[in-house]
Image (cartoon, rainbow, N blue to C red):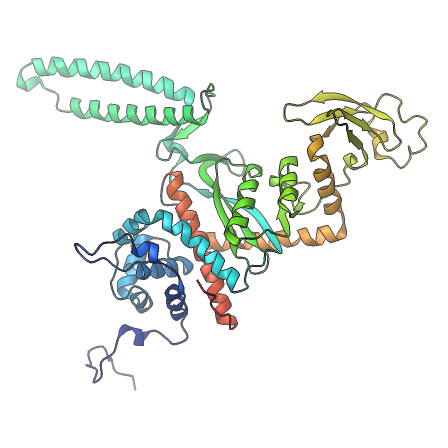
Length: 478
């Protein structure tokens, strides 16, 4: 009536753990893929003396197979490498532990960065990356710390003064206790002193990190720093709350959602991260993107000019959200720059506009004179007639053409159709990484950067393996 339990029955013929993994499992694609990669740099770090180590290829394919299948914890990965036939095959039955994976990542942090680039080039060789349209975006990941383990600059000074006073009193009490008879000694005093000294060291280190961030300038009293991770950034959440995190940036190819550039940014906002992503995309792929798609967080005259100077066409949102803003009155303003750098501004009818404000970043504020539109023949159709004596902000003269060109492009039907692809290209990538349970479990910018590159490499491997399963993509030479 029932099938027998065969676990206690001895097999007539020898078998290996590979016999327990189905022939159509994606494990075999990962095995073939890592056999194809150039991992000599990993191997070169080992010597023949001492105890033999686990081959880096076995560690890497176990690690990335786990990341693409939702196992982001070293302890869980060590557990499945002992109990799951798929991971026993990938690890060569070496059964690496959580500590083995941890030491491996510390030892090979730089090489893992290079592995990310190698995987991008592999995808490009397979025809999965064409750089027709590349979408840029950033996402916030919670740091491995808490806002409750932080302190503002003003509070730090108060806390250090208070701790020093307590230490002086405790040390005086300890001296009195030591001078008294044995029965009068307070055994808790040394522990109380040690605890406060350790607290003082943490606060001093956090304050020094804050002062380093502001590079000699006065540190605002409300500026905060986490004790556990000095590199983590305070980032606003929904409502008035905030949390410490990292701004993880990615450039994603539009054809198959391959991440072609990945970086950490040192600020919660995105606009200063664009130039780095742009350069890294060209460096990793050896060519430039035809079109760059980005949301309003990247919108600035400098970024638009940089994209055009790079040889790409910018499609950057005009306002928050996916819908372009209404017509910009700046598009009908004429800006002329003389050889000596003198800027003259006029309305569509040729009426000169006065420059009211010149900002430190080179942008200017202009106004139409009073009654300038009274007898103008273009009054009815000109959008400026309702803005008489109101200041209109214009970008730097050297960025004006790029800003207005992007505006006209985003107002066109073709431009809107191109930009609509941004959300489809890049948003699912961050969703895929977060849904895999990828959380920041390390501290410090360098370690988090390695973690982010690993997460992006795992995503790209998943896309490559998926393409190999669906089609007959051949692996390009390494």
